[in-house]
Image (tube, rainbow, N blue to C red; front, side, top):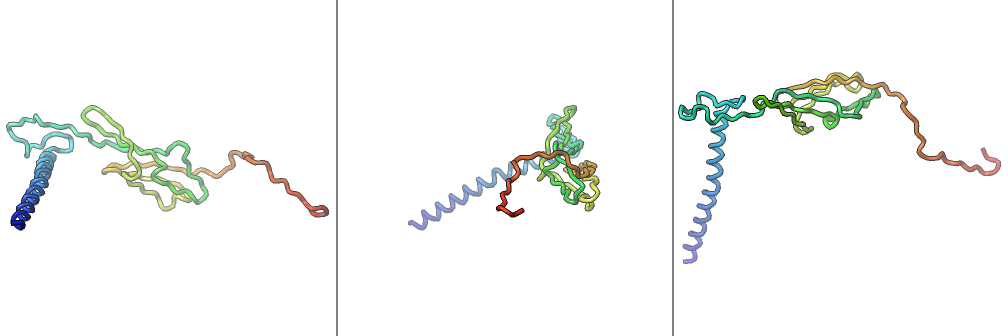
Length: 166
């Protein structure tokens, strides 16, 4: 009798797991089929649109138009053979267009690719940024190392000599 109750409980639990897993899966499949019927510009494609719909389900999507890159304020690269650009040194912005509305979004370092020339440490050059098929280039010139300011932050040490020493 205990075995029959155990088998019944296990079968009910497995049926519950199967149903709970199949509902999100079927919803996801319907969603993917819907997205497959929409082209990049946000219009329903003609081969998957029903005659009854007549374009009633047209969804406009943000379309990536371009990306721009600039050096962050205060960041410079010097001509001292140590210039090594990092993704965090740049502000990269993606420009999206949805219909007639233009939006800008900041792209962070883990989202875009950056290609630096091999001779950048010695000559500077053009850095290329890529994001979702769009690219931007930024020319960087190395700044000559020059003394800008000297600032004394502590008094110099006073050196005591023993008598007769110099």
